[in-house]
Length: 235
Image (cartoon, rainbow, N blue to C red; front, side):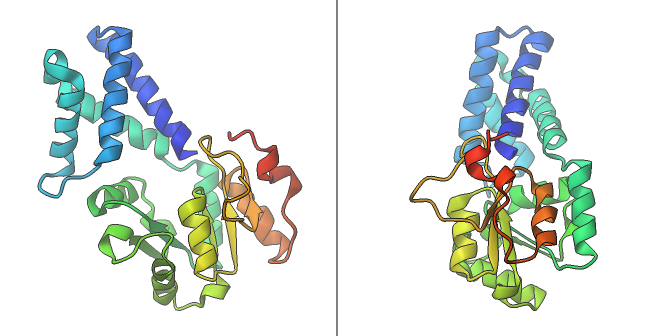
């Protein structure tokens, strides 16, 4: 899951700050935590390049004592970020297999520059027939219009499509409200199971590659019991 991978990035980086630069362990944790909070609050700045903006954020997080390390720390963070986010071989294999007989679309919410950087660094364009970034459009998930825009690009009807995502409030709710054929939820460690008031996905799986088991069972197959959210430990 992306959330768990992000935590691994910051844990490793904190360890390296202590090991490589002699920064006390508690200070290293505070630095990486501070950066993460600021990055989540404002991942992009339209007046600066991504590199310049993130280096400034690292300089602030490092404080006066360690701000001279900002460039090196940023470059290491960037490497670790995409190292851990890179899709696993079984995931890319599944995407290639799906693309042979299906049209695939990717819809992502977020700032344009940051999201397109992620798309290109992870080499995702090769797997999808359309990629939409919310900041480039008047809508974002869960608004039905962004799902309809993807359908228009693909020249398909909403009822011919399914949505796969890890966020109930954007991916699953959006898929339901857009009238898609079905929705598939992949729980995260932050949200390992459904609550009573959550949007209800048609299927819940532990890992994205479990999608093939659903597709092979047909559109009206019951939810896979061994992959349901109630049994998931969020891993």
